[in-house]
Length: 171
Image (cartoon, rainbow, N blue to C red; front, side, top):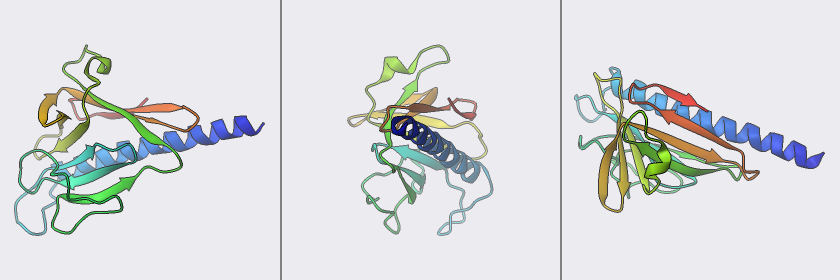
């Protein structure tokens, strides 16, 4: 069946996308907690992943140490020089980031906090634990954990969970 093959293909692509996001977050974790120094300065900077769009996410370096990604510097296709943007990851094949949310503790579900329209997950040495910040309008709030859900055109969804411990998993 063609429909079955499309579903299977959509399932594979959305699973790959979820793992790409998990790997992006892991890359930020490695950069932010290891000895990676920023080229311009001899200081250690935090690294993070920024979510705000349905079709891309950004690996960034926290140049001003405010714990957040300074938006407006990246374009759809890539990073502007001298911005906090390191890499823009595009979401393709009709897949999209359907939801991202933060939880306030280990028992509250993401559903209680659906209203955020931006999410930064930042790692800064020596802590392996992330700083998770959600945005609603101009307001920011720190969260205990985060999840990012991706969905295929066939409506297959996968969720990437980032725990306060720094553990990253795909469900």
